[in-house]
Length: 95
Image 1 (spheres, rainbow, N blue to C red):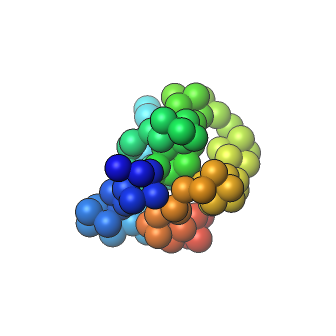
Image 2: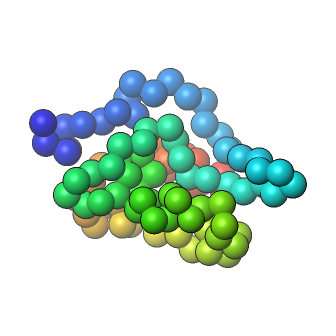
């Protein structure tokens, strides 16, 4: 199966408007849309466009660092020839 043919977000029935995670007293936004599949070609998540390093570091990043990453997600996925999940686009519009 080619990466472009794989559209897992079509199977995801989530009403995503805004997503917050809480760890202790800290809350942080995440672009995760629960489609956690890494592309072997691009090394990006097919759901959110982040790298494994970005995903693992997410909780320790500053709000400014997270915002900088989120600002690049659609462009980086498009530039890598990946389809951008509509749920990710909608989520980033409300951030």
